Image 1 (cartoon, rainbow, N blue to C red):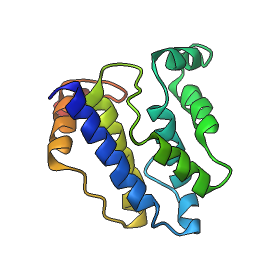
Image 2 (tube, rainbow, N blue to C red):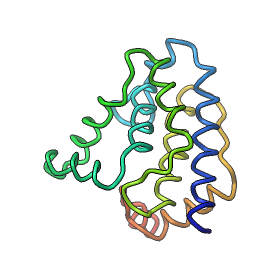
Image 3 (tube, one colour):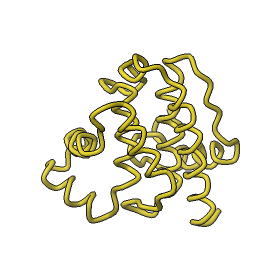
Image 4 (cartoon, rainbow, N blue to C red):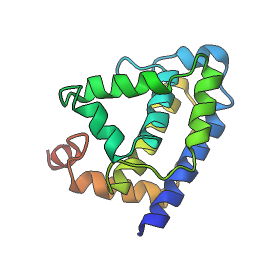
Amino acid sequence: MNETEYWGFIHAERARLADLLATLEPEQWARATLCADWSVEQVVAHLAAAANTGRWAWIRSIIPAGFDPAKHNARLLERHLGATPEETLARFRDSITKTVAPTKDFQAFLGEVIVHGQDIARPLGLGLNPDDTATIEVARYFAAKDFAVNSRTLVKS
């Protein structure tokens, strides 16, 4: 798969998630997700941050965070969290078609939106079915490489 095809899948999965988010009741935005310590709204802000963070912005954030991903993610999340869930969703919607990423690991960024979509949908009891081809690409990538998580190591266990 080439870069253009990956971006097409990333944009489609962001749009699929945004459509689901538009159906949420106000109280659902504060609900817990499968991401430890993050609410639905915070995961959405994280995805907006990811869609707006290129290589240099990533470097300018991770170095002052002492290369601590939790501090880095918290800093970026804070910048992309809206004053209300509606504003956070609008920021995410504005990011749907962006082609910004800190590296060329497109499978990882596709995986981020697919996995975080499930992190949101499953605790809420909502169905969110990503594209089969996209899911297979992500699974192959995660099985082959430890990127942000030790997925390859876990597959071998």
